[in-house]
Length: 153
Length: 174
Image (cartoon, rainbow over all chains, first blue to last red; front, side, top):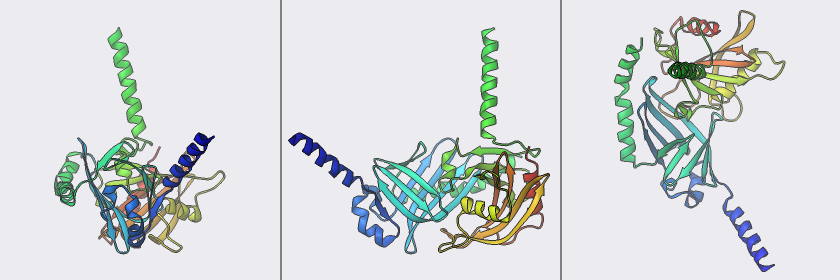
């Protein structure tokens, strides 16, 4: 019987721990950041990705009172693209961060170590310096992208 | 004999793969990058996003890359100004209410053969980044859903033939 209660209390406490941690702006982020994974406690998250056909630099960065999600990528066929969206809410629960943008888009990103995994793409978190280097690579390639676009004709 | 069977299978497989990455046919030349095969291109897009249409022959910068969206259409619903505006909300976000992200400048309905279609001119209300974007969205019913092409540009003024060319591509769908 004691074991049963022990199991029950452990289960209840694990459920309590698994409750979502959410923030909508800098103020609420400050209140919950200690409950987030270590790489998400620094006020911003920088991500970089490279493979044969895609170089990408993504970031969740402060903007006004809240945060924005920024993505710059250079695709072998599409060339260079820059996009961003205002973040309405970020919730972290059971190893998954759900980012909801003001457009209504809701994106689930699985946290694996210090990486965010989106639909099988692992985006490692990097330092600001490495992010800027990745961003530079994407944006400097813009001229090259245009040239490739011409070659596609 | 085995080689023949293998090459036929490979041919069939490659045909299936290319057909999967192109969700529609058009009489115009285009290439398609699907979100299914390159998910990262949809990281900041809404759930209706399907992929990017590449039209390298277009003389207009804003129409070389067009986002492709698919919006479900309720049974017996028709594409009119109201459903067109509702679809836009699913595609780019709200244009009304407490926190609009899109400002609609113009909505126009037209016909593609016997199918209803519409076109919206819009722009960002507030941009997450330093650039405000201008959008031209053309939609039509296609196989029971709304297929929408979203052209975007950071230049404030559209070229005179932009609307005609985007509608032309919408009409070219088979």
